[in-house]
Length: 132
Image 1 (cartoon, rainbow, N blue to C red):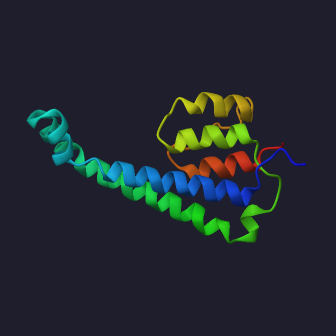
Image 2 (image 1 turned 90 degrees about the vertical axis):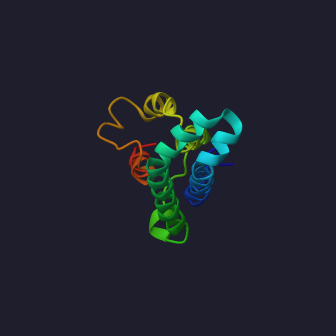
Image 3 (image 1 turned 120 degrees about the horizontal axis):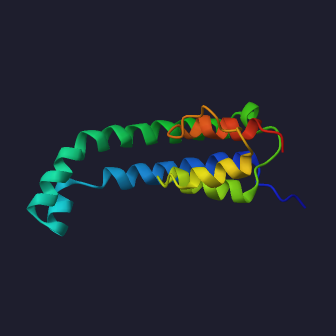
């Protein structure tokens, strides 16, 4: 019995997390903030709207990229991924940068050097090329 998660499922899980995160970020509207925390919060949220729109688009692009890899045999051949690593990658995809420390620890010293942590396909590519 294998103790790793097949790559195809890794792509599917991370794509779903990124799609969900995009919906969550897109749902943070100025009106909703104002209804919850008042007029100042609504103004502050409205100022954040352009960045939030950009972030939502970026998350969707990354989710779509990972979704496309599900059906491409070139991307899911090879060893699977340790369940703990998938868990930490999911936490990272949800926007919790604290997961970087654990990902780096599991990957090994220097393995993640130079990676763009906001680019989940890049992070995953790096991890999947490491010797297991």
